[in-house]
Structure formats: C-alpha cells, structure tokens
Image 1 (cartoon, rainbow over the protein chains, first blue to last red):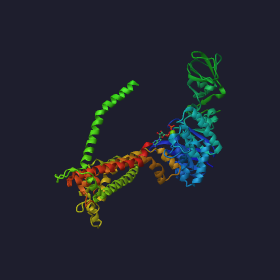
Image 2 (spheres, chains in turn blue, cyan):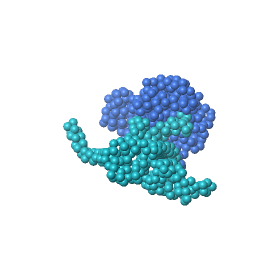
Image 3 (cartoon, chains in turn red, orange):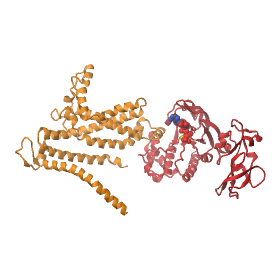
Image 4 (cartoon, each protein chain N blue to C red):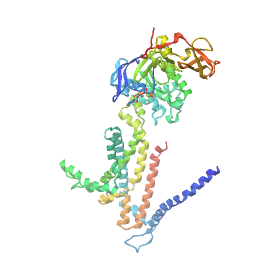
Length: 334
Length: 291
Ligand SMILES: Nc1ncnc2c1ncn2[C@@H]1O[C@H](COP(=O)(O)OP(=O)(O)OP(=O)(O)O)[C@@H](O)[C@H]1O
Ligand SMILES: [Mg+2]
C-alpha cells in the first residue's frame, strides 16, 4: 500500500513559481529519488507531498485518495528531516514512540514496536539516551526509527545523509536501501548527490527549476538522457558536450560523449589533443585533454595507464554511445 | 607552565582590590545589622541602650504582624510568579504568531518594564484603581455596578496586579525569545507524528521553555521577595497589615517606629528567609540550568 500520484502540482511562494506543473506516479513499494541542482524545488515538492506546504493547484493522490486538503498526520506518510529534528528532551525510546503515543496506542504495544524498530536499526543499547548523547549516525538512525515504527504508507527523506561524513554516508546509504527493500514500503528520497541517486533508486526524477526534466531508471537516464540538462547532470565525471563545427557532421547542434566512452590511444584516428592533467586514482585514470577547436575533454580509462600530462594523444568516441541534441537541447533519436 | 602560573597570580593580584571592596561593601552593612540587632537602639527612647540579647528577635518573630507579613510575602511572590509565567507564555505564543504590526505590538508589550515602580504604582493607584475617578470605577459604573475601592477592599490583590503588570513584560520577553529558538523542523516532525496543538505545546514547546521559565522564576523571585515601592505609594501596607510584606514591615519598624534594633533583627531574619527560599529554588528548578 502506498501508491503516490501527482497531477499538475504547482506551488507559488507569493508570485514566485517554485514548482510548475509536476505530474508523477510513484508505484507502491518503489524507491524514487528526486535529484536536481540546489534550489530547484526538490525539498518543496517533498514537503508538498508530506503536507507541510499547501499546493497552489493540482492534486496529490495517495492510494487513490486526493490528500491535498488533509493535514500531514492524516496522510499516512513519515518523514526523515535533514536536521533529523529529534526531540531533544526525550530519550531515544520517547523519540521513536512519539508518533504511536500521539495515535493513542497502548503503552505495551508501543514498547514492543519501539523495541523491534530499535533492534532493526541497532539502537537497542541507546534506547534510554538523549539525542545529544548520540553520534551523528546514531541520530540519523533514530530519525529513521521514528519513521519506520509507524508503518507508514510511504517514507519521505530530505537529504538524510548530507550531515554525515563520506564513509558513514556510504554505509547508511546501503542500510536505508536494504531497509526499504525489506519493508517494501514506498520511499521518496531527495538528494543532490547523483551517486546516491544512481545507487539507491528504482526510478529517478530529475528536477530543474521546478519542473521535471526526465523520469526513468538510473540506467535509462545514463544511457538515454532526454535533454542536455539530464545529460550534463547524470554521470560523474560529467559528459563531454561539444558544440559547433565538430557537432555539425553528426547532424546535431550539440553532441555528447561520456568520458568512459572516449577511447584514448597514442595514435590512430579521432581528435588529437594534449593531456593537460592526468588524475591517477588507481582503479581509473581521468585524463583532461585539450583538443584544439573542440575544447577541454575528459576521458576515463580503466586501471592505470601510461599516459602523462603533456603527452599528445588521440581521442576516439564510441559512435554507438554518442548522444546528439538539437538546438533547443532535446535529444535527437533515430 | 611558569607563564600560566604567573599570569594566574597576576590576575589574582589585579582582581584583589575589586574583590576586597565588594566584600567590604557587603560585609560591613551585614555585620552592622547583626550588631544593631542585638542592641537596644530606639530613636525615641535613647535612654534604653546597650546589649539586648535575643529580645529584638523575640519581639520581631512573635509579633503577629510578622506572620502576616511573611504570608503576604509568599502570596505576593508566588502569585506574581504564576501570573507572569503563565501570562508570559500566552503572550509569547501570541506574539510569535502575529505578522502585521509585530514590532509596535512588541514595544507596547515591553514598555511597562521601563516604568519606575513608584510611577507605575501611582498610575495604577490614581488613574486605574481610584474609586472616584479611576478607569476601573468608570467602567464599573458604565456597566451598572458600584465602583470598587480596590486598594481598600483588595489591598494585597491590588499590589499583586500592579507588580505582575510590571514583571509580565520581562517574562514575555525571555519566553518569546525562547519560543523563537524552537526549531521549526521539530514542530513539523511533531506535526507529522500526529501531534495536535495541545500535545505540541505539552510535549515539545513546554520542555523547550523549561530553561527560560527557570531563569524567569529565579530572577523574579530575587526582586519579588523585596517589593517595597509599590506598597509604600499605594496602600502603605494597610489596611492594618493586610498588604505589608517583610520588606515593608522592616521599614515600618525602623522609620515609623524608630526601632533600629528591632528593624535590624527583622533585616537579619529577612536575609535568612531569602537564603532558605534561594536554596529551595536552586534545588527545585536549578537543575534545569545544568543541561
Ligand atoms: N518559504 C519560501 N518562501 C519563498 N521562497 C521559497 C520558500 N521556500 C523555498 N523557496 C524557494 O523555492 C526554491 C526551491 O527551494 P527548495 O528548498 O525546494 O530547493 P531544493 O531543491 O531543496 O534545494 P537544496 O538542494 O539546496 O535543498 C528556492 O529558490 C527557494 O528560494
Ligand atoms: Mg532542500
């Protein structure tokens, strides 16, 4: 249970339009990630679904019921905030059980449910502590515990990992994804980190300036970006985008080639250029190659390669992996 | 290390004069009061002088006026605390909501705090509570009731109202600031957890305010135990001793009865009582300040 459908949702703050005409279907049990640059309206869209903001127009259906006039508590969703928003004067047990207490559940049942949630999240030893006596990762887990204990129709996450350090972020990312799969509860997850988006999502929604640019599975977005924005936003390092005379022979205003689809060789055909920087990561090598008339291109080669800064190389794009875009930035498909 | 030890020594030496002056400032009056409290020292009876033993204390503590003054002091302090804390929370919640004219409303709410106690009390006595030309009397007659002589009929209640009016802004200001520091996301999280307005207040807002309430109670108590000017200019402690508190009783003995020894004994008793109250308060609410 937990199918969320948005129909023509708009949100204005005064006369600033922050969300324009978003329509979207989140299937029951799916893990959907909203990505987009800062300020594009990801949090706002999530808060509209949660009921923390009122829609200006449009409809939001949860399991077929239009919820736009329902208060947050009645929508059956739970939210994990970026700041965690734990209640500082309550113990971990109190924090996790607060929603159940508000729902008027008997004490005994709250106890068993909180114990179960704490066990899932490895929080059992900390149940009687106050939030300020916990580490960042533990606080994060309490916030998640508070969300799962109510067995909601859906989880809403607003950049839940952005306050954690890199290593913990990877762990929590895996933990959240695993938890969501085992509970089979619908989840909407907001992030501006595309690695999180690519690794966790069943479906990614790319937002830009308040509207949806493309919806699809991570690989769909990677392989078939609908437009220049998605092409540039998804993938790391970024796709090389080349305009002008180089693109013309392909019948496009812009062509795009991902760094991993540029073959690098000492000679042969392709674009000739000079390596300006070589980043050796061990597993990969990133080469930044200055190609006269084309610009600075990024190439990614697997493993350690023998190329170094200052050397001349030939870059050969894989024609099957080349993306073509027209003047308005839309992908040209044949 | 040597440097720190030296700095510390230097710091102590430099602090010394201030500490010594403050200490003298405090200890000399205290010692003098204690000294006088054991003397027969009455300005209208200079013949009867010399060591009095505990008689001043006996006299002060067995005076029926003392018990009434003691009770009045407690009633006054507790009532004003209750009114200002509850009223301050309500006003704070209200001011936290307003959007238009917020600045002006806030200044209006804060302003009583800047009015001197004597002036405030005189304004209440003459403009509001006077049974002949006060505003309350005017309202009462307009509504068809007989005007009430507030200061004569309800002397202690009148004093409580005046003092509460003066301290309400202070409580409001502190509590409003605390309310505004409550994290918005916490309220939203509670909203998503299904908390309605009442549970939000009980479980989220009130615990958040605990520390601010403690500060208000501690600071106000210090001043409320020694309310004096308001009583002097309105009821003069009367009728009888109906609105006399301990501070006023001491004044009464020293400057109306000219009994310096008795007043000094009263002063020492007041100091002891204030300390007992302080210890209670710190035990009771001070733990809120640790966290
Ligand atoms: N209460 C508000 N009043 C006016 N404008 C707002 C309000 N809240 C958000 N905005 C604007 O709406 C836009 C989208 O904000 P939002 O918080 O949804 O961005 P975001 O995509 O979550 O960004 P980030 O990744 O930085 O969190 C921003 O330009 C922001 O300035
Ligand atoms: Mg955001």
